[in-house]
Image (cartoon, rainbow, N blue to C red; front, side):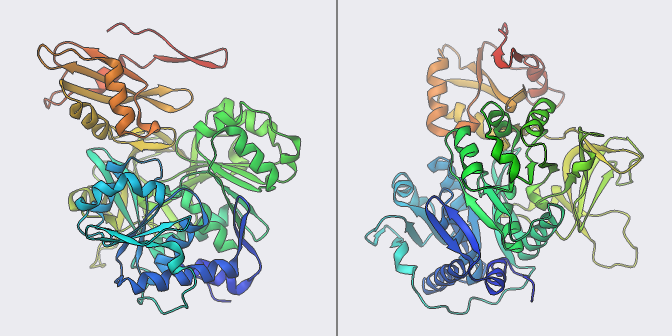
Length: 540
């Protein structure tokens, strides 16, 4: 049996192996691999009838549902590149992504399209919108033609544009430290090699049932699909409101594997788990930040036979390290070693290797290293660089990802996270740009200066704090600023604290606002008291 080399072949190869094997579950809707392959091919044929060229971008702005998966893999089958858009983003943020990646096609729902209509004129490359869900009358809006999903549901297969494994398969958007989200370009090779690597160390197999709780716009969220399809396993798509919904799904679907971020695991530990879960949950995996030890202990007490996998990943290289379950008790603070088919280096600023336990930058090399940032040569040159110290006879340099994260490696090769070089905020498993938050405050008017930053928080990883000063003679209201944020930002980007001050904000030696100095004032704002989070009052 042949193996997949292109992203969409993960589905077609699994279908050839077992047509009747279940691929997707979403509520009462169930798709086997044969049906999934047919829907993927029909979508690809429909996309091609719209004149889609090779590597054109297809943005998918939906929650977790079968159409989301079909559109992503169907775009790949057509020879295009898909762009998953986080469903919690606001219209302005979605429009930025559509413009930045020069999206040609948008797949969304009627309710999500409505607030976007006024912004479509700002997306000159967009030509088509495909509306999933209830029956929809095809129409047009300005230069954009709007189609119904069902128009593409039963088309016969047709060959897509020829693609090879180094072609662009996807662009995943992640927040950048200097402002708007940046698009990480991933090839078919990146995504397929990642699927095989992760499925190898998680030992995924055909009888696995993976619960997809993370957004499919996350690398770790989309990885639930690719690893499952590589193994021929079943994926359960879940849009949950409460932690209890996740626990109920674990029971109802007899889930064998779940990957989540620490804030969700913390919430899950606050509800009761039926004992039956321990009989089928084979593993739980953590990503997106350090798992609190108290939470890890609580999870292991609920499912003592499930293996814990603690992972570290970069969207720029899909996934980098994992800590084997047998090492969790010995070194619970470690992010482990390199995943299969990758090498992780710890380098000094001059590119030489660090000694044991010497802090340095985490550098990832191998098949999972992405193709750079879309439309951003400067950012690409900063993160994707030639690897120093390679064989002198090689004319073409090897490009590696320089993470910007400081780590150390012990004598046995296990890696420990130390800190971040940049000022990105890591909250609820998301990477958040402080500049993007600050722009919302400036747009609110009457704001002279603002600094957004993250401070330690026992549940979120980091809480967002915004320190604001007013323009001369202006009066600022915390309530009105908070309302502006709620109108412009998704929930995970909302500041937990808005601190209004007088006078200029502190500067560093370069004349920039000193976020670190301000953050130090809030280091102990959030404390855990009797199992709940409370705020200390901070004088300002």
